[in-house]
Image (tube, rainbow over all chains, first blue to last red; front, side):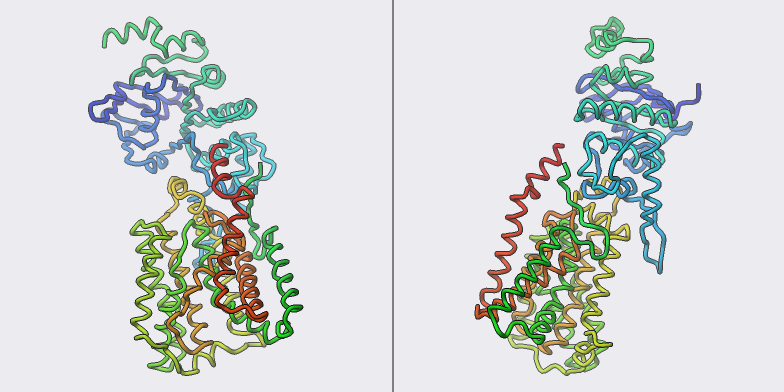
Length: 256
Length: 328
C-alpha cells in the first residue's frame, strides 16, 4: 500500500471547557473514499474543519505527504491540495460553469497591461473536466443558478479538481438531492477517487456510504471509536458502532 | 427551472428587456410627434441627445455599482463638485487642457472618498452615500458662495462642443467609455469578480476574490466617469448653478434599472442602460413639449422606478425568487 496522503495524529479540539475532539488518529489515502460516520455532535464536522484549515487543532499534528503542516486559514489548506465542498456550495448562481470553476483563478492574457480572460481555454478545460467526470450538462453557458443540485455538485467538484486538489472533503453532498441526482453524485465521488484523489465523505446515509466508501471511520462523543474496511463490515455493525451498542464501543467507553 | 436570466456577453447583446425599451422609445417618439408640432424636428433630436450625455456617462458607472450590489445616491452632487473644480480652473487660467484633466481627477478623488466611507468604513452603500450627499450639498453651496459660477471662458466649449468628421466629440467620449466599461465587465476577471460580489459577497470572498479591492475600484471608476460627465456639462452650459445635479442620481438609478440591471446586484445590461437613459430623456423632453411643466419630471422618473420594481416583484425576480433559488 502506498504512503497515506494525509496523517492526522492525536488530534484534539477544545472550545473552552468543552472537548469536541480527543485523540483522533486517522490516515487518508489517495485513490480511496473514506467515510466519516457518527451521530450529530460526534465530532465529524469539527474534524473536517480542522483538515480544511477552518479551525486550528488544540493538540496533535497533521502530516501531508510526509511533512507536518499547520493551517491558519482555508487558503493554507487549499495550497496544500485540500479542497472542501460544503453543503452550502460557494458557487455564484449568476455566472456560468466555466466562470465558476475558474473564479478567483482565471486564465488570462495581458494585452497592453490589461488582463483579458482566455474564455475559450477556460471553457475547453471545463468541458474536459466535465467529460472526465461523465457529468452531462446540456448548456455549459447557462448560469449555475439554473442547474440542478446534482449538477451544482459536479461544478463544485470540477472547481476542486481545477485547483489541483489531492484531497476533496465532501460534507453531506447528497443531503438535499433527489434519488436520481444522488446516484450521479455518488458516481462522481467514485470517479474522483479513481482519478487518484483522496476523498473524505461525511454522510448520514449508511447505505450510501456502503455504496461508495472503501473505509469507514465512526466518531462518537468526540472520539474515533472504530475503523473498518467497508468490505469487512455490515450495516448492523456500523449502526451499533454509531449508537454505542457495539461491545467494542462499550469497552472503550468504560476504560475512559 | 430557468429562473435566472443572463444578459448576453456581446457588446450590444439585446434581450427581451432591451427590445421592449427600444420599442418604448419608438412608441414615445411617435406619440409625441403626433401630439406636438415642435417635437419631430432635427433640432429637438439634437437637444434630447445633448441632454443625455452626462446621464449616459454616469449611468455606465451606476450600472457597475448596482451590478456589484452597491449604489451611489450622491453621484449628482459629485458631478457638481467636479464641475466647480473645472469651472474654477477654467476661470482662473482659461486653459481648456488643464480643465479637461481636472474633471476625471476630481471625480477619481471623490470616488476614493466614497469608497473609503462605504468600502473601508463598512457602511451600507445607500447609507454612506446618503450621508455624503448631505455633506456635499452644503459643500457646493459654500464653494459657490451662494451664487452661480457663470461667465466662464469659451475655450473648453470650443474644444468639446464641436464635431470631428461630423460626429460630436461627446459621442466619441461616450463610445470610448462604453467600450472600456464593456471590456472590463465582459472580458476581464474584474467583471466576473464584480458580478460574483453582486450575487453574494460572502461566496465571492470564499472563492478567493479580492472583494475590497474590486469594490473600491468600482467606486473610483464611477467617480472618473462622473468627472468626465462634469467636463461635458461645463463645456456645454459654461456655468455651474446652485442646484447642479440634484436629480441626476435619481435619473441614473431609474435608467439603469429600466435597462434590466438588478437593484439587488449580480446582473446588468450596458446596452439596457443606454436605452434606459434615452427613454427617460425622450419622455422628459416630450412631456415638456406637450406642455407639462418640468416640475413633473422627477415624478415621471419616480413612477418609472416604481413601475419597473413592481413589475419585477410580480414576475418573481425579486426576493421571493432569490429565496426559492436559495432553497433549491
